[in-house]
Length: 216
Image 1 (cartoon, rainbow, N blue to C red):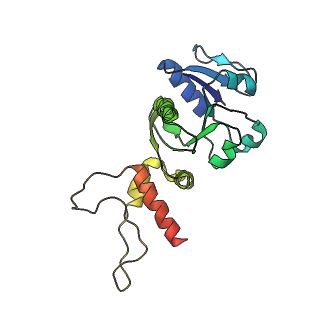
Image 2 (image 1 turned 45 degrees about the vertical axis):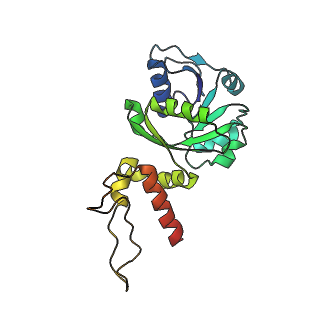
Image 3 (image 1 turned 60 degrees about the vertical axis):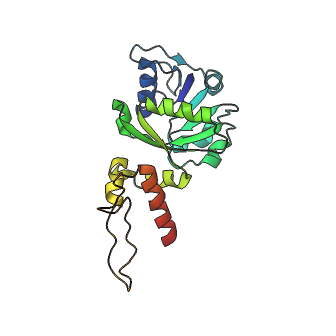
């Protein structure tokens, strides 16, 4: 597999590129603003421009600031595009002509321990999903979420860190009202219930997003 990384010398793109090469998972091409530089002795291909990177890649990773996207002008027909940008939606990314996946790795990518939730656009295939799992597996673990809104919710809560979300979200309902209900939220199985499996973050986010929609 050939992976091209736009922003491949930044902290996240660089962590991914190094991990892919070190683990022998992909041939890596890199495009950045400053041109070729030391990649820790690793063999990568340095793209001359965006069109060159697309030609060198089966999977294109976009690891730049969201504000850089409008001026990027990516044309990625026939390619899988994996975006790490917060706030740039699937519909916007799809204008590049590629099959789109959005993911949100965290800083633990630098030590190969990132939890990376991701969401796929409608054109993404089973083979694409396998490629996403391989790429994100180089820097930790990934989990596909069913709804794009859950990625946005993750971004909004990112100050707390993804690993802390389930604990924060599983708070007990507030008592009140005639039925003892209230608008509190409890995620996961009730204490002492038969199902003691801890819900995944995707399941927690799904419940949390439904809670916010009901309150909207």
